[in-house]
Length: 204
Image (cartoon, rainbow, N blue to C red; front, side, top):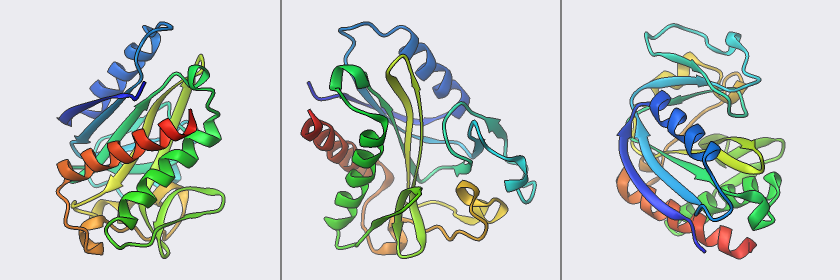
């Protein structure tokens, strides 16, 4: 069964994170998988292995220590976030395969708009040339995933200059609006969720 797609609008990061944890803890064998699409108010998040020194300047933006994988990143209005709430055991899906499916969904979305995107070995996410356009961070508990992917669509990218994005000093970031992709964040969320659902069904 394809995952249920929920459009949450603009949400508070910590509240949505708590809701993901609660959803995952309450799951049963018959709980349908879900994709939660949202944007967040400005927030910096530090993954489980995140190093505080990757925060280079205090912009007055809240910093949240999260339980996802990865280092530091920025979320803000105009960036699409899709949280991937899956029963990996039921789908017979390994974490590495899930990461690949998420990345491929972003690559396929951009390809449909004439933008060539790619993976960089050893650095999860999706890149256009040297610049990162989508970041990934996941957590798995009892074979169920949460957290997910962020795609820069039409946002203020300046806060990224105050961090080493995903732990890489000087890593450039880009967004779909600067790549000639004429999608609003809401349209991009719907399209990316559709591509991701298709990837997951292909893995079945």
